[in-house]
Amino acid sequence: MSGSPAAGSAPRGISRGRDTMRRIQLERTRENWQERVEDIGFYYYEIDGSPYWDESVYYEFTSGQIDELEEVTEDLYGKCKKLVDYVFQNDLGERMGIPGPFFEYARDSWRNGEPTIYGRFDFWWDGLSDPKLLEFNADTPTALFEASVVQYYWLQDMFPGKDQFNSIHEKLLEALSGKIRRYCSYETFYTSSVQDNLEDLTTTEYLRDVATQAGLKTEHIYVDDIGYDESNRCFVDLEERRIRYIFKLYPWEWMVREEFGPRLLERSLNLLEPPWKMVLSNKAILPILWEMYPGHRNLLPSYFEPRSDGVTYVEKPFFSREGEDIVVRPHFSAAKPGSVYQEYRQLPGYSGNYPVIGSWVIDEMSAGIGIREDTSPITNNMSRFVPHAFDN
Image 1 (cartoon, rainbow, N blue to C red):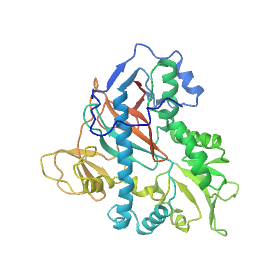
Image 2: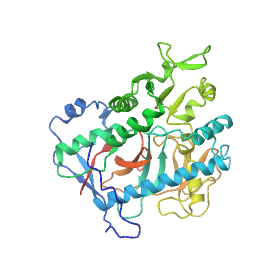
Image 3: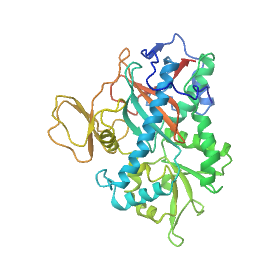
Image 4: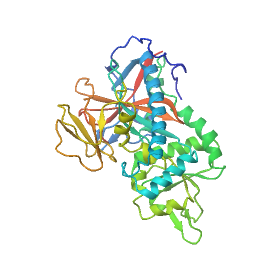
């Protein structure tokens, strides 16, 4: 879907000649750009009257910076896999707030090697210092379509001579036509999202489209429409057909508390993302990673308890989304149950705009980036998506 950087990353220890990443204001946007994005199926370029897709600016990187982002993403994903092993070996489910039966369910999923499709690291980075992990959206990351498709067509229209760190579509197609197709035993691959959420529907329909291209038989069903057949002890669609394999854009921490949640423990349904992603989609991984890799150059100091060391920390609930319930303070009097404390690193500012780099992992490989920016240092669901480019 786009030109990705060369497969080989610069070896560790070799200087890449770091420079700041640049935010470039454009004098013009594409003519009739709204029609152009609608033509490819992107309709939420505005949210509640405010711009969500913003092509009046873009971020420019060097090829060395792209190599570094790719290398850091691969390295951290490898460490996250080791963390999953560590969590299960040391029975840390209670520490992470995962209910006991579901922790065993997740452990079985990990032991069985159930596959994953995707995830997204969110990084603090200015192009000069080491990228720092803010969190890992390992279960239900959105902005996939924007990162994979929308910014790709922007690049072709605006800067066909430049490159973009974006092999998301190609890697999705490879994963779905290979291991996911085999995993589904060539049966129907369902995709599911909540009703009345255009962003979620677009994400699932995009994945469904790629799955169809990969040769899978596909269906979409809303989460609320999934039924349960008591006599056959299985989940079914609106036509009472059994659902065996489903991609759900619905958080695991919500699923385990739903009325139908305990039925998942019967293991009649195979889900993507798999149950073991309950571990990685949990912000409790931040202090555990810091315990496992203290002082790592791409991690921020993180703890289960607040510290009185003169450093400002961010209080993050284990399960929060789009900046919800994030608190920044120089001092916390006591630990809040179900929260972690990560050293605060204010996002780099560009004319009053603060970008977060979302680095995509597809089929356990680094696959590209998407950038969200806001006039606030705390990214939320209204933060704008802006494209990027680099000179290869």
